[in-house]
Amino acid sequence: MRNHKYFKNLMLVLFLTIAAVQIMASSITDDYFGNPIEGYDARNFGMGSAGTFNDLRPFGIITNPANLTLMKTRLGLGASMLMDRNEDNRHVPLYNSFDSYIDDAVYASNIDIYNKYAAAGFGALKLGDVRLGLGGFYAPMLSFDGDYIEEVRNNRNTDNDSYPEKLATNRIENRGSLDQMAAILGVGYDFGEVTQLNFGFQFGFLEGKQEYAKTIRWSQWAINTFAAATGNDPNKVLPNYSLTTDAKLKGAQAKIGMAMRVNERFGFAATVTPYSILDRTGSTLEHRDAYRNTAELNQLTDIEEDYTIPTNFRVGLLYQPRNIMRTWLNLDLEYVMFSDISDHYDDQFNFYAGVEHWVENRLPLRIGFSATNSHLREVEADGSLIVKRILTPKVSAGSGFAITKNLGVDLGFGYSWREYEAQDLFKDSYYNDKLYSGSSTYALWPNSYINLADRDWRNPDKIRENDVTLRAALSFTW
Image 1 (cartoon, one colour):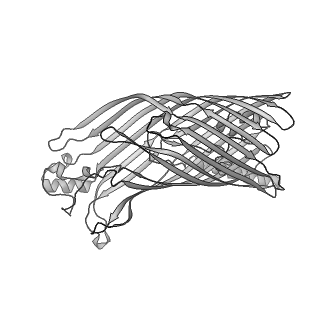
Image 2 (tube, helix red, strand yellow; image 1 turned 120 degrees about the horizontal axis):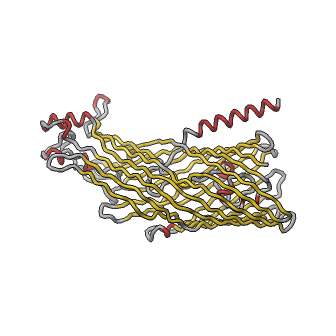
Image 3 (tube, rainbow, N blue to C red; image 1 turned 135 degrees about the horizontal axis):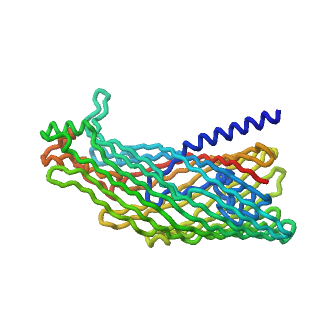
């Protein structure tokens, strides 16, 4: 009967592994700095990603290298599946005929899913009161994945329950990640039966790629209608557009950490990650078809610049209250020096908190909360840089179970949301067919009184995003 229970648990692990290969999402918001990836340890992810002090799971060595010798086991191995689902809804202000604001109207909604994975392992040896350990891991730090699709339709009315004609399809496809492969050295000393002080050093190589593609493709209906109205060749009337970037990132990063077990109830930890400057090389190609009296645009620009990952300070506290049921409370505070990137960015604090409570000392129930800051980076037409802070709250929960004495599974679930303003991703003036015909009237827009003007910061998009996240980790300790 016991073997049957283990078989069911093992089947669940295999199911999660297969599912994890197919799901993960990222925001389209910033294709340059990407989206930070957190929660390699599914246990701590369910506790709000508060894991600077972590003496239970192998993935704790990624958050803090000093956790390597803080753990009581000699050997630890972990594999983690990172699964996210991002929903992006973009709104424009809706006004009535008297120019009075009514509401925000959704004009584009996208849901995208991708996958990432991570692995970690360590070994530790106790020599009297001293513990020595070596470890390593592979994990993605930043995700540049993201997809966006938007249909541009004309202003024909919706009589007979039919959609207005589609003029063009706008699309953005981002791919890539910044991955880290690191080695860790840890040392710890036991001052007594419980009190323990640990230090760790981590050095890793960072490597990744950024692939960005932004395209505008006119529909066949628009091409045929425009050609019929102007008497031109259908293949040489409306210009398609594309902007592609192919860049590589390469560099290194170091981290030092400390973890101290004060007594049976309290633990304290801290890490410092100095800023890293990576090499970013590649090229950007902008292409637009020729039209009317305008020649084809085909501009290739080489990329060779520094890419900065800012300094990070993080402290964490563990409290285990005297309780009949086993309980863990983790609190983390993080300070990120975004000003290392440039003076346009402000340094920010991030907060993480979580609790784990064992029901009847059998089933762990976890809940957490975090509030993190990131930045929206936009480059204006004149080359000026606009940077806006974005706050992302997240609530999380999780649980886990043991397959055998040394093998266990943890699950973490998260939901985050954010709202901010940004520039329109595709300028409205591009769909003004008068530019391509030289005519004084529209060929594609039934209402000839509209003015297709580009929106700026006086009338930006409002973006509402939400992420549903799942982390599944398999841990072996001995």
